[in-house]
Length: 116
Length: 111
Image (cartoon, rainbow over all chains, first blue to last red; front, side, top):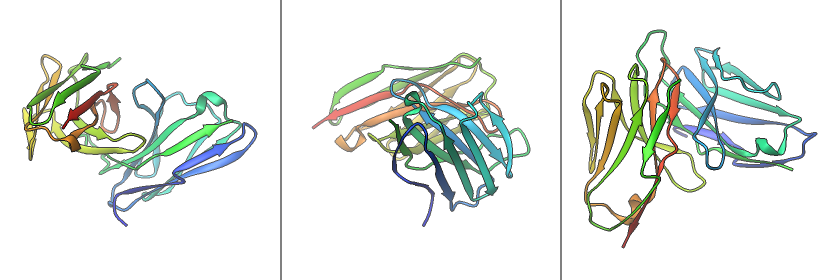
């Protein structure tokens, strides 16, 4: 496989459930990201991991909990979500940097999450 | 706070036309600018990346320009085809690993 792969593609969960989204990248990158795309709103950055360290948490509620066990895998653990959390969750990766130069980001196909 | 605006929100043109999509941003202190396309219900496909030191990038029928001082970028699509129909997103690199997105332009190419 190549690129960025997200599973599952679709997820329906109740407000009391616990579920996890998975992202895997086969590009040899060192930075991974979670973005949220809601209807009629721009993509919002949620979390950034750079060389397995979390470098950005964009004021995301604690019911979303990221985990990055290595540079190739990223998880988003979900618990006690609200209906307004229904959205397309996108994972991305890039070369990663300890310097100032930004690098090209590559995205997965997303997980369509519906909270009922 | 960086704000990215894309105009128009939607555009419909006949096949074969050349067209320009616009992106503007409020803070010129960017690392790069990236154009993506998104098909309905799908993820994002990277089209072009322009570093802050560059003025333009080309890939096939696509050409993207960057004027950092005026806070503007354009995506030029030559000889449009029905397969070009998608939403086009502009994102500025704000910080080494942070992208700020516009709301996109929904493009429809009519056969």
